[in-house]
Length: 266
Image (cartoon, rainbow, N blue to C red; front, top):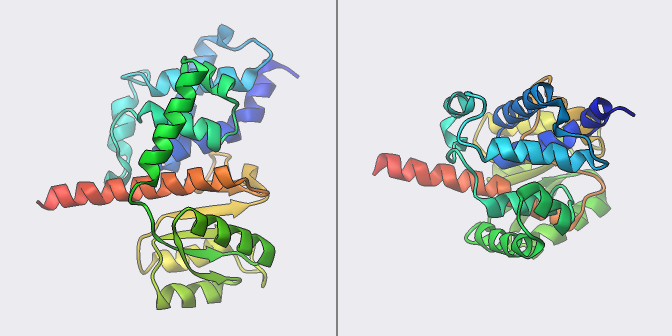
């Protein structure tokens, strides 16, 4: 398989990481596009046996730069105000996502971020403490498989959150959200009665704004960059660290937006 083919193979996972890092499909995909532009202009950048690590290295170099080939300011201007956190995300969050969301080893994460493995451990620990602080919320789970729903419920409660209910269908989700508005939604995409978690979420978002994390056994279908797609996505079968990382990111962006709103009205 050629280097180009290997890069394409890893693009869905780079998009997942970029969207979690920025809190937006639009912004994340823009940084991925800038990464691909760099690879076209600098074809010798990738050439070792570990193409995925080198691809993430290129992305990280662009992300941490002050400009993205002249596009960084434009990317930031194009972002909705509620998801703008500033030009550069702190290093601890990058280490946290690379390790806990993308599953890179400490050595690989260190290589991507150009630090040593001890620093990676310190960064991940720091990010975990920061992201966990004051983020407990009410969570609605939309999942038709009882065992998976039970696993998710136990996991999020173990993280300090409260589960307001578990819905198996689109109709149940709307009813549960109407009785107690959640602070975050975890939604499977395919539901028991043939309805869609996407449709259920769209129904709910007509009434109130809430961060949403979608769960699917086929994440590649929603990481193409070719249509409106979820900013936050968990793949089945999921690992606890993946769920924890994505929930932390979604709540991080929500709380940052609220803090900005408070400052704007002060």
